[in-house]
Image 1 (cartoon, rainbow, N blue to C red):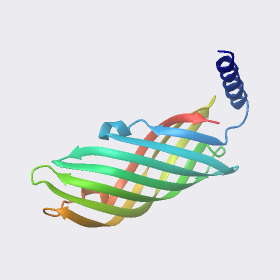
Image 2: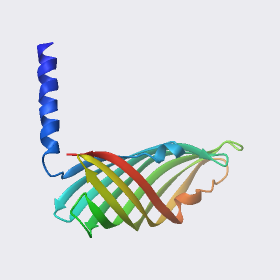
Image 3: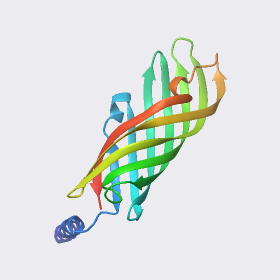
Length: 175
């Protein structure tokens, strides 16, 4: 019991200490993603006063128009803050995205995989208030990829290829 209390005290001390310092790292969750049965986490690290790098990782398992999509995606991003400082201000961010998805069509039992690679540019605004981050962003993305049929007919990959709009909002913790 003493060890648990000591550990809890140490974690509380670190937490309080981190709120007194400038934040240089954030862990964020895109809270809109569960609407499409996706979990999307981002890890952002300030590397200069007005520059950060972010890595987004997501897993999806959603269905639309009789097609089920499941798989992973990675989104590395370079953020240049135009106002404020890294992790707190307006920014512009070029990014890349890699996706690897399994597609299953329920009506025909067709199955296939698609891998896409793409990129784009977003603009956004992030606020860091007492260790809590809130971020909102929007911008174009282009993806191109390959499809491999496992069984049945080719399945249309839909919005995972070509031009689309990337947008979202995250909430997280700064350290």
